[in-house]
Image (tube, rainbow, N blue to C red; front, side):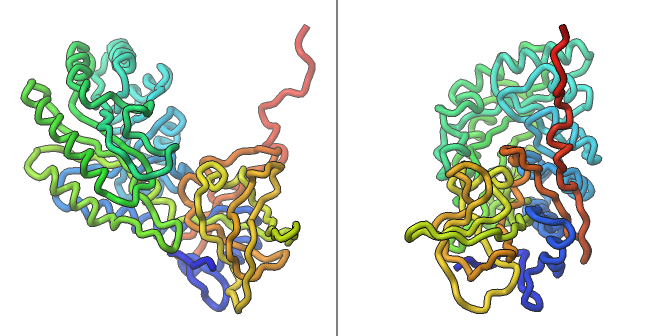
Length: 423
């Protein structure tokens, strides 16, 4: 049967997050509903910070993992940097009070509009993924009369033991420049008057439970930096990306954040480099749950289903990645279990949250928490089947508050025009 991961525990026979009763939140905020622990987010962030010790560094939270303004404001308040992959994420970071000088802009498809907005904001660096992208940044920087700090994102061709959709470090992937051709890319950057090629970047994938591939990639990047410096490039920073995994299943063993960071810091000791790292999942995932209510129990032959009010439009990870999330009742189990698929109301056979899962006994009306849902949960939610997106709640300092209200049916059609075409 499912186990209860941090930061959850049963208090007085009901599941709580940091001492706050989740059933009380569900009663007022409704379901489905995402709930985040501010304390867990900060604890995970601080594990990165403390691991670096005296090594100059910036921990750039990957906004794509969970982008609610309250989460970003919480991290900005303790000095975090931010890794963004779109103009919309830049807008969010600035809206939340983030320091533009601590922003790195990654991604293979930056548009001219996005690049210009980032240049005007004065971001810290662009992680460039192609020669045409460097040409675009140079042209826009020239027009604005500014210099753009850039790092070439190199592809170290290191295999990451993770799902194929979130592996990014092989030559067959769309990301980065082949590390064997990287020196040519830097020679190209040197010809542009408005680019400052001061960094090297890499990122090999996500949900990595073994740190060894990251260390191999780091070694290849440091070898490249040595060659670049011999050619006169003033390489001042290195960005090792993110990707550290979390324990979704009871048998998973996630890397210790502090030990991982200490190992990276040891590799760059004496290199006179400012180190950047881009964690997202390992900061936000364990901090969040998705609350849902059981609607029906249904049998079909030998198969049993627990139908809940949260579906693939709320949490697509099980359908998209065959991802595992522990599912626990908000009422402490007293014995008894059943095996079932946990499914939602979306009109798709692929709408499931768990398959053939041994669950504590559940009845219609019972509440459950879908665990470790703080990263890549709400950010991937949609309005498929015209379902309003869930509310988001933050638990902080012994209380809770709604940080995104539940969408209404009116929200679903906002911006649409049901009138006739103009003649």
